Length: 87
View (cartoon, helix red, strand yellow):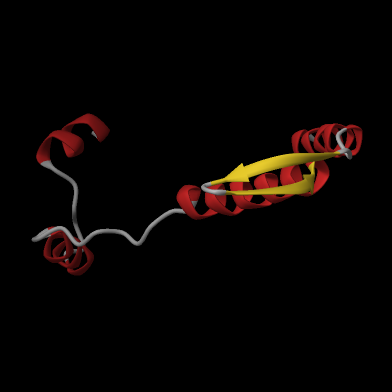
């Protein structure tokens, strides 16, 4: 629902700004529609947000895998405190 709302709001803002305006980039000045510029900024921002927000690969922690393998091979992994609590 939120994505639909943001998309509709973005479409309204972009459609209201369709006049050509001068843009200066470094030493060059060129005329470009605000619609094209806003749409370009929105698409680039979305792509950067997806790239930054995606989860990375898990980092390897020394000794963590060995502990996991040991706990898989042991049939009984409860501590004495856990056994006393259950009893």
